Length: 171
Image 1 (tube, rainbow, N blue to C red):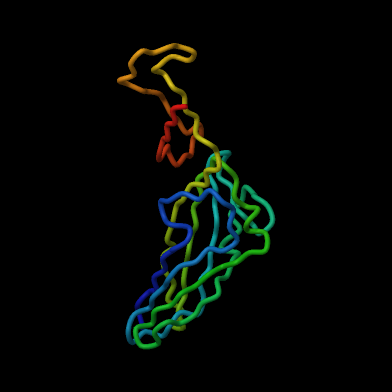
Image 2 (cartoon, rainbow, N blue to C red; image 1 turned 120 degrees about the vertical axis):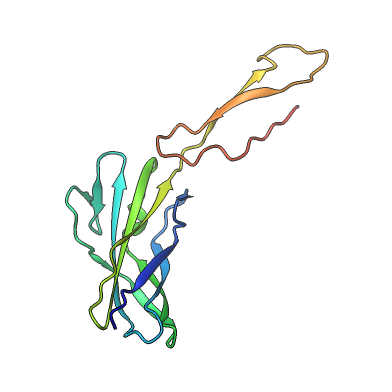
């Protein structure tokens, strides 16, 4: 077996957004037909925004803790050597802070000691409510006819999910 295993993060969705704190990171992995099979998947978590910091299991630190988290791995297909995996940390739900970009690093090792080149999966944690304002008609104005309603909206974060929808109600 000279084939490196491969991992993929499923949740949180790579290049996606999370709004609610979560305690489990999950994904899939494969080692290929005829390979030895995966023995271990390790994770590392980094955040950007207030400096590059690493989660050590209880707090954010400046130094890389070198893949401190080991995922639970279940084989889905013993012939194709496909797997699902997850990592649940008792304090992981407290790791996520609004207005940060997070990178999850994964690295799998198989029974033949082949080690995956670390993979990176990025997501943004955004709990901030977007701002919106009506521009037309002006506040307190009286209109005989109303042909246009316009306004502005913005997500105030540096690391943001952008405004997805705007609802207008006329009373």
